[in-house]
Image 1 (spheres, rainbow, N blue to C red):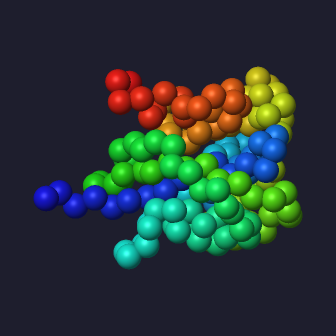
Image 2: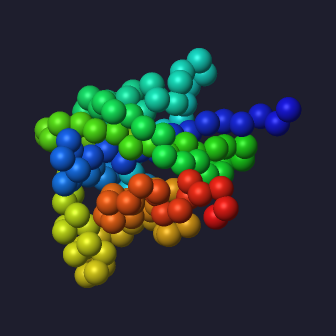
Length: 150
């Protein structure tokens, strides 16, 4: 059987869904931001990895972890599992070994930032963008990535 290394990516939102956490990896140029992500450790569930990674990367405790969709990931033998999760709005503490920056964004801030190019996000073919677009649109499917026919 082929070996598959699972990774997770998550869009964390406020309880009312009005804000979302986006982070900028240390290797990414400003103004690029995306969802939080990381590898699932051996013996760990993907949902537990979401809780652990968010705590490690920005210091938030998440709940209501929900699977959304999956996508092959460009690392060899990897599969990205996309999730949403909820956290109370609190100060973020970006782990400097993982993130250069992290912030809570409102929908208007993301929409405006994309329009003015003051904010960059992943391309439409990515699961991260699907999660972000789903939140922006308030729809139930992350950019159509969960549709088996797409």
